[in-house]
Length: 393
Image (tube, rainbow, N blue to C red; front, side):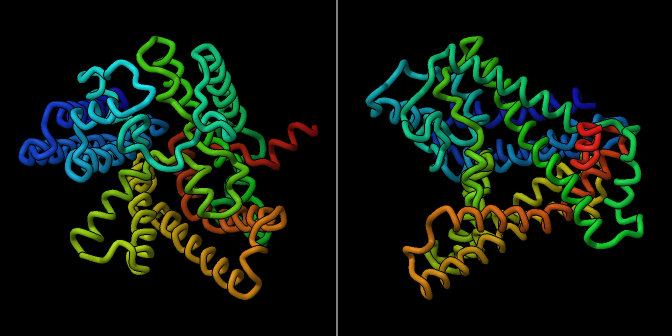
């Protein structure tokens, strides 16, 4: 079933790339037609993700990325009006200008360049190879060894942190996770947390592993250079607030396509001044809500009924968590003073806050996903306490 999804998925990207590369920015009819075509193709990908017999391990993510590609395509085609001519013009202004990018190669690369690396539209806060040396780019050999190491490590983590359904003690713990066992609230929270931590590790491992393997292939085959493959995620040590978690530590693949589409609605449709407090709050909430809808498509591919999916709730709540943080920060700065906001104590408190916030909000989304994967007969995250039991036995 995955093989039947991929042609439409790849056609979405090809349609976007060829259109932005070979049409001028003001080609409204051609670009609008391309936008309609990619929406239709993404719809077919989502429908196939719901059919019996599909591989749910891949069907869900492929469906979700189909909608990401639609948002990305609308941003490239109609909002930023990206074009090959603008790319060439920008390249001529760069001090370290390399050979001009091939138009056909650019057409097939740009739709996958979600962070707009080495383009006039590059995102802010792009992770760098060395924090204390932002311009540093490793040589090809070092880059390939690093990517290979990351890919192997992530693949190992995925294997270690997942177990099949016959794992001793798993069914009893899953019963507690589903709320089918009569246990105390504290016991249930501990079991949820025991599942959530490996789930988070697995999610990051999949993202970093796939990215590293793709970078390894492209650079190894000479298709692209290491400079086009900066780290996919920031450091975990930066995740001392919800804002830092989603703005630095987590991948920024969705940032441009989500923000651009929401800004269009707020500024061009609703005519809300971009710098107003109302626009800021609405932008924050709607961006996370739109991300929730994208992840809802993944949940459906994982056999999670739409009524049970917590994706929209989880991601929307993240926005309110960030608003709460800023409110607390403002009150603290006003009462105590700005000079007291930094330091190791604040970071420790921040880490505890983020862990606690996610421990409360994440189960709403992740428990139904784990159940969908379990019902599909696939491997599930290994609860920490069961894993530790094996290590200590």
